[in-house]
Length: 270
Ligand code: 13P
Ligand code: ZN
Image 1 (tube, rainbow, N blue to C red):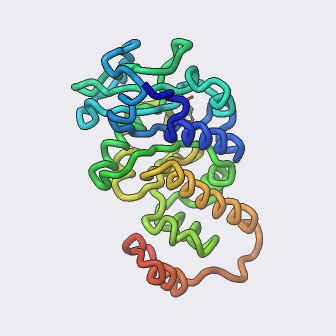
Image 2 (cartoon, helix red, strand yellow):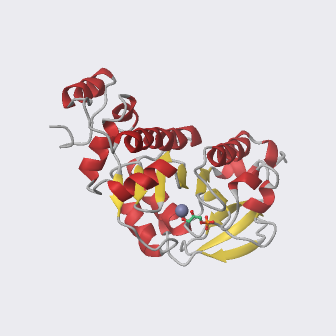
């Protein structure tokens, strides 16, 4: 058996969570991340027949039956993960009806997965239909993006266009734009259902007055999406109260998409 803490995917997860904390996106226990793992990756390090305990999920996700996830624990601080991964992280396998998770490793203080597990699992199921290579769901509370949801209209086209206009890189990184949910009670199945629906058409979903979730094939991809949105939101919050003299025209935005062979969300450029 290999040492689970030396596996590349575990090291990347711990480094990414630490980095998220260092970016100021994850105060206290803010934020949560899950990574879809192959059975082989888990079997290399663990006896997959040895279930530590069963944790009810409170919702069915039959599409994910038998799938393995490395996921952050509820109430856990990202800043602490590097010092005690086995307490702050867990590896679970979703059971056949998809309404229970078998704990195979971690949560060693008796803890359990994030309170946003519904959003994670339902979004993984939804996104895998669109992109079978998706593995990551990342949620956090970036300051400028959060601030922007207080002062910018929450129309998805208008919000996306404003972000795209803050830096030429934006349309290249997220040509699919950002989808937006209103302020909702966190940790609920309803938030999970609504997020999963939104994840079908974009890899970024804003929870107004709460935070942002990004999905991708790798931790770097999900992190990079969030990082690029947060940079744009930071620029917006710096200039929002000032007269706007210049902007990035739709002609340039279209040119950027063409240059990089990308299709911007239909109807978002005039
Ligand atoms: P958890 O500690 O349960 O992951 O909750 C943090 C959070 O950001 C809720 O949206
Ligand atoms: Zn949150």
